[in-house]
Amino acid sequence: RSIQAEGTFGVIKEDHGFRRFLLRGSVNVKIEFLLKALAYNISKLHNKIISNRLGCSIFIKEIL
Image (tube, rainbow, N blue to C red; front, side):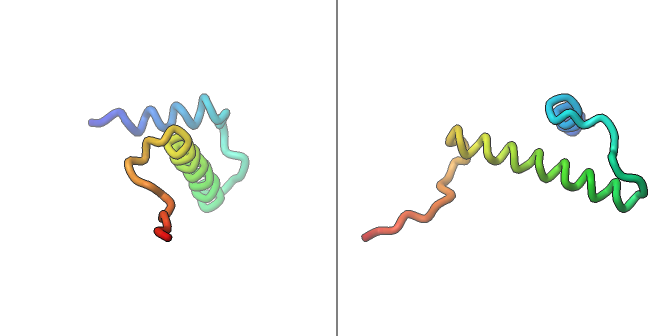
């Protein structure tokens, strides 16, 4: 069993300060966690773009 998912939950809890859900109900909890996961992924993408570790260009260079 891989431990990679556990690290992600640890980062969301510690670094993002997530301790409990603010909303109640299964649909609301799913939406809230989806937003937390989306923020985590955007943060990782932003860090890769800033440090130039994508391995490809995200912008199309125009040839004049």
